[in-house]
Image (cartoon, rainbow, N blue to C red):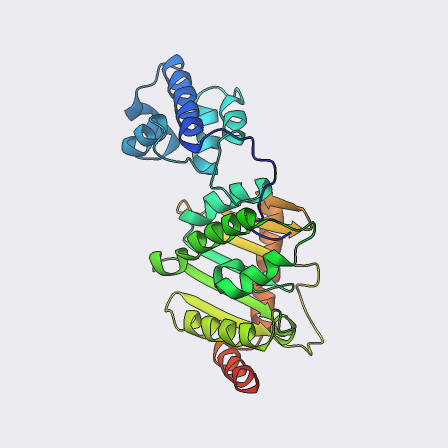
Length: 279
């Protein structure tokens, strides 16, 4: 499955309860280290208000916060382990959740896809086509949870106008006409509308392309508000968050090369418009 895939079986604690548990653990470790909130905030390079919100269970901490908090409190591993048990938004696969937290606060998001239209650009009809074709089949409740999670993520495009979004999509993904001509027509219109946003760059990798830096598969890259970069690579029923700077640097290099190999933004929009006219 791909992106925010439904997690079968449930069994996780309530999100608010698990956030409060993480916050209580953080506060206990901070106090054991003899640090006031102000002192702790200075060490982890977040505001004291952010620290207070996390300790009170009102805010989901990001990866950078947790790693700095671990260092400040003796690297016990307690915070990393506790965070793994924090319940997140229903409809998100376990392997995708950590990325989704980073994604929600990112200042730069790059996506290359060769399998399907990225979730942030999907229409409801296209997404539901993907959901209903999953094996083993899902029931209506699972599909509704999936769509609710994806629709919530899509708000990022319009609610974060200062975040730079970049998409490179293989031409063949649209030529496949997943869901039929009507679904594809609506999808192309939706992508064209998104491409008009000032903070969105959309490029198509042409079907015929002799040199291609992305043959190892889809990838995502993001930059945090602290200017740290992470990558995410996904396969069937699995996904990997990449934090190793050397690996992330290599993937950034590949993405940069693909930007030069893909059609320009203007030509990509023109191709979308031609596709729309042929449907």
